[in-house]
Image 1 (tube, rainbow, N blue to C red):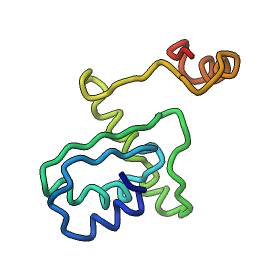
Image 2: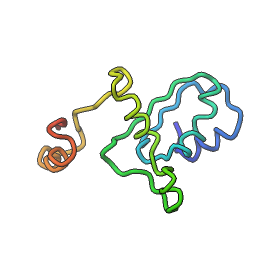
Image 3: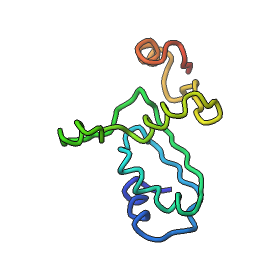
Image 4: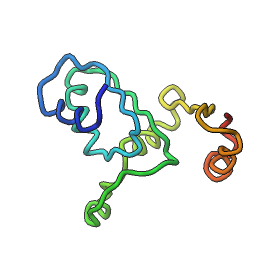
Length: 118
């Protein structure tokens, strides 16, 4: 387990023993940032688990040029849309344990369409 920055630093070193990368908040990681973390994983043939929510905050990209070139897309968003038809590739968690039902009412109505319970 590590932060995106620590995983990115590992990507710059040869670490063939990395066989699993779990990337939390992947919806906030740009594709380029995530790929730096995935270099050793790709070389070792390991597994990747992206955890995130396509309805939450996107990556922060301050450059207008980078945004215009499409570099503001998260790795999670790209993979979520690319693998949407493959049921075993995308798992939707529908129980929200950290939120009271009354607090969940707004996000459920605005983003999830009755797809969440608490």
